[in-house]
Length: 430
Image (cartoon, rainbow, N blue to C red; front, side, top):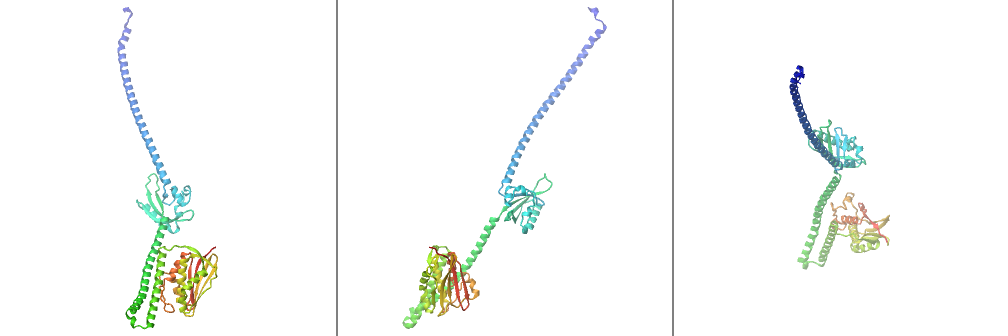
């Protein structure tokens, strides 16, 4: 058996251990490569997990941004304050629903239009200056101006502008918020007018009380002098002198009573304490009763009073107010009519009103005095034809009472020829 094994085969056998070593070395290198691959795979898996985590965070951030964007869009669109985003040329880039409503147009039709077209022609310079301030400043700028909407209604607005810091766009834009001040301006105008009226009323009141104080002082001085004389010297006075002083006292007291009565009524009118209770009044009968109260004063001056109102002529008015008006007008007519003169009271129907006239043949009124006859600002206190005193309260009070009855009052006069005072009342009904 041994002889069968020859030289060459031995050589082969001897070489086998070297190949085995080489294979072992190759296997070792392969194992190292496998380990590297496994490590790389592990690293890739870790990186993939990190990427997935980052992607998840990005998705969450994107969702949060979308929610924030939707919130902003909702806040912008549904804000009760009109918002506009404009470029430097004043072209509308964005507008919310309130902005479209203010201008009276659908907001889709406003985008791309010049905002200047809605600014009042007289306010454009103000708006251009406002825009320049917005672009030159980093803080909020404001201005007041007028704009006109699609219906050509003028709105008083307060504009607040702010430059938008948007790095995504090259061209700068700015946002303006418009606050409608029309109602505020209306209330401000009413308050201003009320303040002016209040100041006028206060001035009138001060002047009024000054005149009244003066007019009260004079009669009281006469009363004091006459009453003092009667009280201390009555035994040395003749019957005629006592009669003279007594008549003076009577006239002064009567004038003071008329003044106080008018003051009381005026005060009640000013405080709305007089209730308006309109009833149907037969003018003819009503005027007859007033004439009966005034006839004594008229007869002293031989003045004739004629009631030319037809019987059955009805007016719808407050009886107490109308009585005061007639009493004052008749007292004035008698006061400024000379002896042997006449006073005519008439009434004319015109549509649904009745025009009543008190016409006297008196001394008349200067034209420049006529506009102020019914004003409390300039109380006219002139002596009558027989020296009768007055306060000037009668005609202003008549005006107040006639207006309470939804009527008007006016005067026509020729100096030296007489005066006619007319006023209107609503017709009565059955």
